[in-house]
Each structure stands twice: as structure tokens, then as C-alpha cells.
Image 1 (spheres, rainbow, N blue to C red):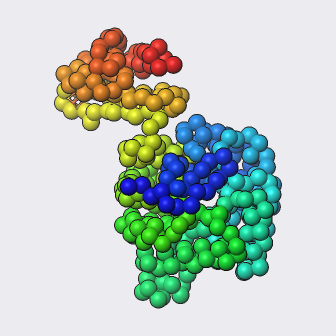
Image 2 (spheres, rainbow, N blue to C red):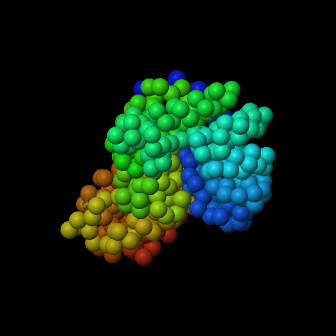
Image 3 (cartoon, protein in one colour):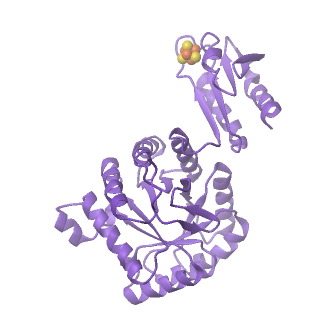
Length: 352
Ligand code: SF4
């Protein structure tokens, strides 16, 4: 059962919590002060299906850049702030739709109150979060190390700091690079926290390990009904984070759009270069990410058509050729070198 008893929070024009759909978040890795590059990257993230983007705000110039970026993008922007409360206020003045701060490192209660008051004026949500790597020393000592219980205590302390400042427009995140600790932490937190949760496995690593750790961790947490926004953290292009997050959500039945690619693992029957074909098909399909279809890329004509039956469109390889299949029916036979082009033609005819 999906958790629908959290508060509903508005981030720009998006709504999370209270049973609303889980949204995909990513973070730019450009210099926020470089408006052109940052906008270019955000537009690519939007195209891939990103719902909310986070940009780091390291100084006054970066805070000012938010205004220029906001004019050119179409999804809500979250400003990521550390240490300097003035950056949080300036980011909001320049149009940030949400801020992410650590109330514990913003410079004391008075400065936190200033930030909360600026957020309150504009009704901007504040995300507070705990990362297992930066858990307070006294909590680590008390719990005898970094533990799920300690992370939750720290997170709830920070939530209380904002609540005591008279504000409840809050999103919470607790992150650990340890998958099972992360799962346990979310289970404990969900039982105590009335606010929407942003879920991710932090520092998950490169494409391979990051995707697997995130798939397992975020997958279990969402399956337990916990989580309102997700971020797959990858050491790499953030566009890959969004694609991976979509696959996780789609696999759990929490997202219905986008293209699902089914491809066979190849075997002794494969007589075309299926691995490179799958890559080229995947790249071609990037242009059509708004479609909601299943595409099959199968290695042979023996099992291919049968296995592709469930797909909307697909290809089954033969000896130096490919059969283009729509809804289980063979509609064309083309040379191996023409498969991607033929598949794209048929896709346009049938779905655009
Ligand atoms: S579809 Fe054909 S080539 Fe691919 S794994 Fe199955 S039998 Fe092998």
C-alpha cells in the first residue's frame, strides 16, 4: 500500500506527498554560474523525463544565476545550499522553487529563522536531510557508530528546528551509501515523519554499481510504499540518472509513460551484432521518450517474433537481416544495416 498519509507539498507547479505520483529528481553537474551550460543540461534532463532539478548554489553569483536559468527551463528548480544562509535567501529571491539546507550548518538559530521567514513569505518548501557521512559526532558516539536509528534521530532533530521556527512546508531526505541501512532508515523514518520523503542511495557509484544499488535500494523502499521523489545518484551524466529512475518507477508500476526496451541476452542462435544493434536502437529511441510503448530487440527469428509479441514494435535478427515486427506480426524484412532506420520509419508511422 502506497503511503498517502504524508503532507502534500507544492514544489513550483509540481505536487508531492499525500499519495501523489512519485517524481524524478536529478542534479546538474555544471557550474550554476554558467547559465548557458546549466540550462542546456536541464533541458536535456527535462527531455529525458526529469520532474525536478537541483542546482548547487555556492556563492552570490550562483544565486543570481538562478533567475536567468529559471527563465529558460520548464521544471521546478531546487537550490542546494551549504553553510551560508544568505545564499538560501538569495536563491529564493531569484526564483528557486525549493531549497535544500542542513539547518545544523547554516550558522545558528537566528540565521535559520531568517531563512525560514524568507521561505514562509514565498511558501517555498525546505528540504532537510541527513547524509550518513556527515552524521553529528555525538549521535555517532551515542549509537556506537553510524546507524539507521542515529540517522533518523538527526533527521527528526532538523525537522524540529524548522517546525520550531513555525514552518511545516518540509521535505525530508536520509541518505546512506549502504543499501540495507538506507532501507531500514526509511522504514524507521516513515513511521515517524509526516512529511514527504526524497529517496536515494547516495554515492552509489558508476553506471553499473550505481544503477544496481539504486535499483535494489530505491526499489525496495518504494515497494514498501515509502518515497515521494527519487534520485538515482550516478558518477556520470545526470541524464542517465533520470533514465534509470524511470526504469525503476516503471518496473514498480509507478510510472506509465516512456519507452520500455525488451532485449534478449543473445545466445548461440544470434546471427547479427545484437549488442551494437540494441545500443543503436536505444539511442534512436531517445528522441521519442514521450511515447508510451514497448520495443523489442531480439536476436533470432526462431524465438524473436514470439518473444516480441508483447511489444508494440520490434525487430528479430536473422542471418545479416532483421524482421520488423508490429504487435507480433512480421511486417518487413530488411538488411542488417537498415534495421534501425526501418524500425524508426515504422515507429513514426504507427505511433506519431
Ligand atoms: S531471442 Fe533468439 S537469439 Fe535471443 S536469446 Fe532467445 S533464442 Fe537466443
